[in-house]
Length: 191
Image (spheres, rainbow, N blue to C red):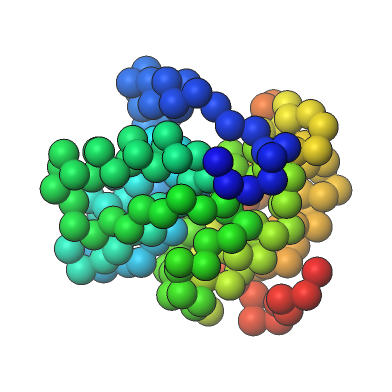
């Protein structure tokens, strides 16, 4: 596994459970942000539930870059894309705070669902999202509120992280927070 050794990882079954797709329909969450031909980053992709849907939406003209810091998750995604014969997905073993395999300013949509709250280097991941997004790129970032310890993101830290961007939409539920953000031209790469 990559990233900080204090980062949290889940057993593949927890994230690859078929029931999860029924409860949280991945296509319903992402389809309003992505269109055919887009370049997309699925950061902290887990077993690729969203990766596969993103690849279907962007089609042959688009591309999906999927990363996870757990080799087990990366292998699961690779098996899925091979089984489905998807040629528009690039999968890499990479922590969300080090996705150097994605070129700067190339991504139309970045998706980071419940990833920041599993890792220690929140700012590093935000810097990478900012780096890969095109000027008009959009990102969906969510965190769970129940995280404890070094991976936890307080409300103040959350505000600080997302306020580095143009906030398009923000919502807070009982167990989660999410924001839809776009790259701000005023953002500097310094933290």
